[in-house]
Image 1: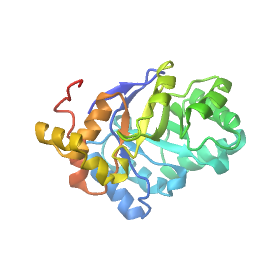
Image 2 (image 1 turned 45 degrees about the vertical axis):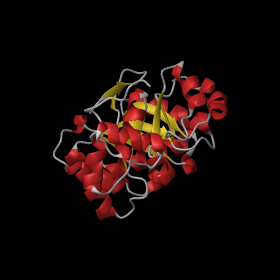
Image 3 (image 1 turned 120 degrees about the horizontal axis):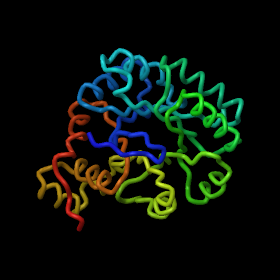
Length: 249
């Protein structure tokens, strides 16, 4: 596993396991345990996913020290105010059964964004969250809200893949060393991406599959990536991207 250092000095795994749409508690707990067993150390969930209890149980019972895992969850828009965010954060912590979070994100930039962010800043100052960030902020939304924040976000989690590279957003965030965390890094499993001639040619050249080529490109390009699979074999394959490097070309 490779790590990146966020703009607040915290180290974050560069490839993580996403749990979106894994709603069945038993399946989610099993998938998270499998992911940890094959080597994932970043686990991403959200209040709106409805699986924080299962994620927390897997994290607590996996056998690894808590500090070896990097756990993220997110505040939903129904709690987007200062007091609402305090309640939403505590509810997530209760469901997860954890003492602290490694990263907490505003899931969508709607409602009282500035008020919710203030609550996140307070929780971070109290030591309950190591890093705070946002999700789904476009350049326009970023420029509307972030100048109101006392603390810069460490991460902006957005959709990003080779067909949707977010270059304008990345240029904006790079000035403050804010990391892009990419969901849907394989483009929703888009066949036109996975079978693209450039991808296919590189897969043959390096002896890797198309998904591994795409993930390697993204990691080398500085992104944090969150591929999702409930298949242990695919989970392991998605991790096998640190033993080769693409050329700059």
